[in-house]
Amino acid sequence: MSSQNPPERVAARARELELGAFERRVRRRPGLPGAFFCLVLLCVGGNFLRNGPYNALVVTGLALGALIVLWWGYLWIRRVNGGLYLFKGGFVDAAGLRLMAVTWAEVTAVTTDSTRYSVNSLPVGTTLHYKVMVRRESRDWVDTWELNTTYADVSEIGFLIARRAGVEVEYVRTP
Image (cartoon, rainbow, N blue to C red; front, side, top):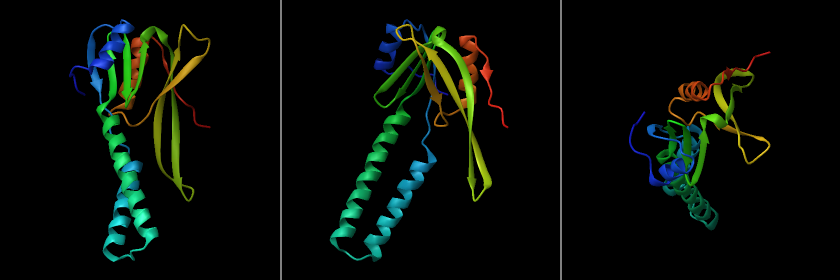
């Protein structure tokens, strides 16, 4: 976890909501499925460049594959450069151009949700997502914001938000 100063746009949004002093930043990490998909595209493209036929369909496919890999790389860098910025009075989540600022008083609940992965009916993994329920003064409904596994330590963040907001973490129950 890094304690460097937040970018100016994050600090300006925190000043608008009077979130107080900056405490720390929780970094994002790249997702493995996207990286795997881009690696597969690069391997297939390299194989076609080395051994494949050179016709219009292959050249078009290689160009599209290269554009997809470049676009994913650009988005990955933008997303990883963001993160969750914790302040004394709330937090700001920055992912690309999107900023979401929440005060501790707006948090109404923190719940968990699990996703189970299986291959041919055999369990291969489980991920736990934390969902933060936020009630805005300007709206009558509750927004749901998900802390997914792109954060460096999602369980620590979920507990920290719940503790500072004064709510309990509600766990999923397996049937």
